[in-house]
Length: 244
Ligand SMILES: [Zn+2]
Image (cartoon, rainbow, N blue to C red; front, side):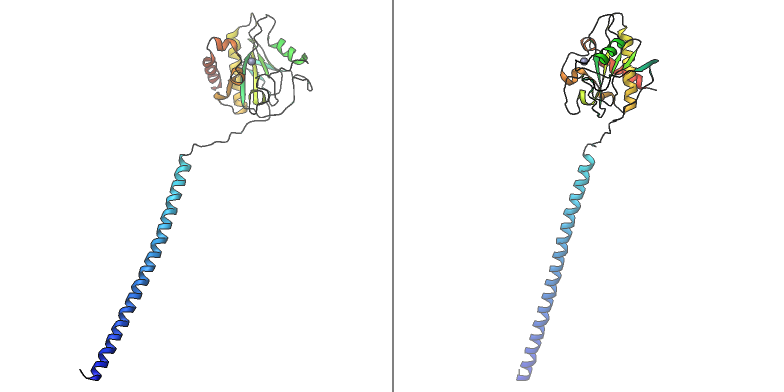
């Protein structure tokens, strides 16, 4: 090989070496580009997975429904063919605190007074005239009469749970069933069930919103219904009465 040939070969080697280094750089760049795309795809994949999990959790989460409770009372005209007498405890009496509230429950009681005279009318008179006992409820029912002594949207003292938030006193409508001698208790139960049904309709209450005094303070009330194990029967009577 002469000198000229040697120079040409060296130039060719240099060109070939430059060309191979360029290819490597381009390959490296392509690799880096692919890696960055892979990273982005991985992040997108993780995000999509998280969104799917979140949607699944939302779907599986029990629907937490927000109930709207009524705060404006109604005055029923007739229940089970009986005219409802609205004859309220005077404002300012100790047993009518005048506290406006939401209506969440219907609370069933019994008067526990077996004297022949202890009918619905007498209990209403007692509520209106008694200014010393801090004791009041909304309706008294017997076999022929229904007295409404306290507006439904006002607190009454009947459930024995003081001022417990959302409790029987603060958010319940108290109904007393008379147990006086000579009173037909079966008819009284029927009238009370019909009253419960009308109140449920008026205030969008459900069958599980029908409670007993016992549920709020443990008192043995309504005594006759509890002792004869007739709670379920009463609830069924209310259910029947709600049917059109
Ligand atoms: Zn009671």
